Amino acid sequence: MSETDDLLALAIRLAREAGAIQRERYETDLTIATKSAAVDLVTEVDHACEALVVGAIERERPDDAILAEEGSGVDRPGARHRWVIDPLDGTTNYAHAYPRFCVSIGVEREGEPLLGVVYDPLMDELYTATAGGGAFCNDRPIHVSTETALDRALLATGFAYDRRKSERDNLESFAAMLKSARALRRDGSAALDLCYVAAGRLDGYWELKLSPWDVAAGALIVEEAGGRMSDVHGGSDHRSGRTVVASNGALHEAMRRVLLDTGAAA
Ligand code: 2AM
Ligand code: CA
Image (cartoon, rainbow, N blue to C red; front, side):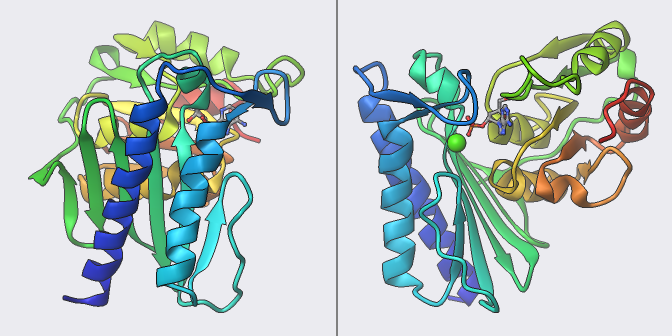
């Protein structure tokens, strides 16, 4: 097996193990705390999943760097590989027993996306991609949609945790897209939204103010499924999460135009 195969196998194993924790503790009594804002939640399950994933990587790949949302990762400047982890993407959904959340694990090699794994434990859907190797859901190849008209497109987005205080709240863009597209969804898990673009269930997705762990895996899965990822200006700053536009490619410029016209640029 190549090193990439080894890394992929480890990422898949850890995503499934963290997903099993999420499945077991779903709809149970949870301890819920808040982070940056009253609407920014974290549960004991976020921490348990992160401890499992980070602990295993530390044991099995002690030279690799790790960036993980809840802060237990280890920054190792100069490391050849970096893991970028959201242990539970869709925490608000999870805390409300709304069945849409996942584990997201990306790996970079020398700063470039190498592989992505996203696992939805309730649907038992495992999305995977490797750079140049295509994208899969449960080992079946997936592809973005072929829709070319924004007015027939199904799009998704989300709203940031600072929306009660910030004027950059995505509402003007949301209103404009609602008028332009066939329909919009707001389902609360950025990584799964990206996988749905990759699988052709959604034609496009955008969001502002995300973080690297929300997009590290999903962005590669979209690109390997034939889609396009960019920031709102068409560049590659989507990897920071500041502005994220994902599409089947055909709709990308139309989406960016609406977003630029409605103040989505930082
Ligand atoms: P989380 O559940 O891991 O916090 C909600 O729109 C989606 O965006 C979720 O996937 C959520 O991830 C993610 N997200 C990341 N940063 C966010 C932010 N600043 N505000 C709101 N959602 C954010
Ligand atoms: Ca999270």
